[in-house]
Length: 376
Image (cartoon, rainbow, N blue to C red; front, side):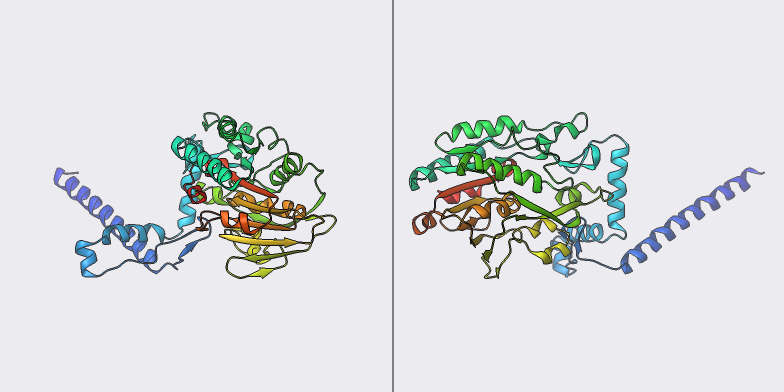
């Protein structure tokens, strides 16, 4: 073959390759343009980009390029499948985590807890001590460790986390005038005390917390409960963050005292119900909201429990699955989430004849939450 012919053939191959690539990109762009759009990702549990502001001012002087990049990424066809493939490839290549989630043994997805702000911890300790002293109350403080502590035996080799037991005991030591309920020797002794796909403790972990309260606060034997499975496909925050969309969901259980309990629950939005469980939320992805309807600033609970005790609970979402156990011990409970409740909790201490005041947080939340300043 002559040299000129070889060059010509090479040029034809290069042009053909270029045309095929351009055609591929064009077809991909057309498919992506007309691919059905969704504006909330169930798997990622977040809202997707609603669109792009294509005004002249935004194109030339605004954030059009950033908005378009976000929109294109959020609405790329088969997005969930690509995220899953990326996560799977990382795992196969030896990565032990993805997006802050350890891919642990036995299908567990465990949240990393690598560091915390010491000043935030010290500030929160001060807020609690000052709140207790100002209102002449003794707080019952329960900090719940995460699965990285309680199920550390399932973590992959090389996983590193904060020593949660040491942190909890450090905090408890500086809350010396309060009644601190240490779960570090208790939780995890029950089989699988955390959800596999979520950062919260599950019904077994919460029951261990309830039993610890009975021993340390109420000085009584805990009530017996009947557990009924109401769902088996809960896929929580660790599932959403990790991209490990092949992971099997967790079961959700309803916990009822065997002796029965009637309740009336009033939420901050005015909704009233006769149950601590929200059945309609079993139809959505975030099935953890089955317990006490998820996050609310203030929830009032009254019961027909054989008790005259009344409690105030300052908490994060770890308490949602605990309260169905705890409710049978109290005539009334006032439940506050300081992430959403921005009024003085101390007014409830004077208006309500409370017998117990609880502060119940996941330790990682406590170490990061700046909202406890509202107490003071």
